Amino acid sequence: MAGKPKLYYFDGRGKMESIRWLLSAAGVEFEEQFLTTREQYEKLLHDGSLLFQQVPMVEMDGMKMVQTRAILSYIAAKYNLYGKDVKERALIDMYVGGTDDLMSFIIKFPFLPAEDKEKELAHIIQKATGRYFPAYEKVLKDHGQDFLVGNCLSWADVHLLEAILMVEEKKSDVLSAFPRLQAFKANISSIPAIKKFLEPGSQRKPVPDDKYVETVRKVLRM
Amino acid sequence: MSGKPKLIYFNGRGRMEPIRWLLAAAGVEFEETFLDTREQYLKLIKDGSLMFHQLPLVEIDGMKMVQTRAILSYIAGKYNLYGKDLKERAFIDMYVEGITDLTNMIMMFPFSPPEAKEKNLALIMERATHRYFPVFEKALKQHGQDFLVGNKLSWADVQLIEAILAVEEKFPAVLSGFPQLQAFKTRMSNMPVIKKFLQPSSPRKPPPDDHYVATVLKVLTE
Image (cartoon, rainbow over all chains, first blue to last red):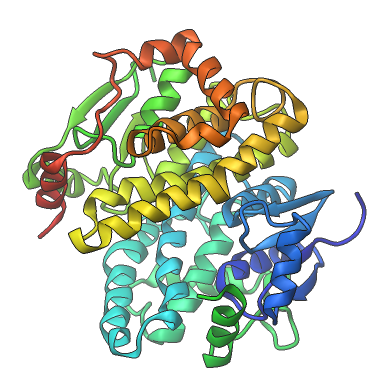
């Protein structure tokens, strides 16, 4: 089915942001429908568009896809960002699992009560610098290549760059002990499709603010 | 690399159970090492076996794989339980992700504080009967086939039978409104490899008890 993928989500990062990143890295243009009211969400529910009553939802290739990981896997495979064989795919899946875990702390962060935020921020930084960044630093050090898997850009690289930038927004010097990740960040950011996504005017969304949190809570009745 | 896959985890279900199910459904024999001390866990970290310091760990085909989803995807791909093309794969992924959201609630349940247990149990029932089971009931009814995707056994079917049985352990009559799922459960349970896995003395683990919870907390907590 022809036509651009269409993304249904709030006007903000959340779970859809990784999908925006991956489509952009693949050079795929997409449209977005932003949910701002409960009524829009209920209409999607009643139309049977949301398999498990949840967003993100992406219309692509005749499917109404839900479940972030399923959508990302499909895009990665379709646009050759999933390695060249099952073993490379296994590594990509492992690496993406780690960055996903790290980013999910940050995705939840704006929804925490104010009094829990400081402690959680410290926890995020500790996990990033004590568990996740060392693992990827080691991967890059061990093979000495520019990309995480198979000496070729993959979903894992795009996901890791996204995670690095998200953590840096919380603590700007968080990569100070990770020279290979610093080089990785510079390399991947300079890839034309990604460079374009990082420029103002792209479909990349800003850091979530109170208005975003309020919209999500209102639409989902959280 | 020859040899059976080796599963390293606690002696209980947790996040390893779907992997035991999938290997069993694929007819693949495996070995298990059970962790019951913190020292064993710290040794695994020190040896560099746990990329993100987490379990499950599965040694398979020369890899030390972590991240449950990555491990399951690899097994599904290797043993032809992942559909015949990208579109079937997309549906399997969507279904599996949805079922995982449900089974994660059940997996986390023994670790919830006593005062939250009643509420969490009610939520499991609500989600199973209003969000997840209706989707699969409808899918089976619409195509009238024995399996969820592509008229052939896939990872999605194995994950679904596991979830049905886990919810039934808490709510024995949960399938009463779902005739297609009742028939599915009977068919799947009668498949030779699954029938074998459902017999006592198979590697299938019993529902988590206090001893299991205590072991996990002891091993993972500093």
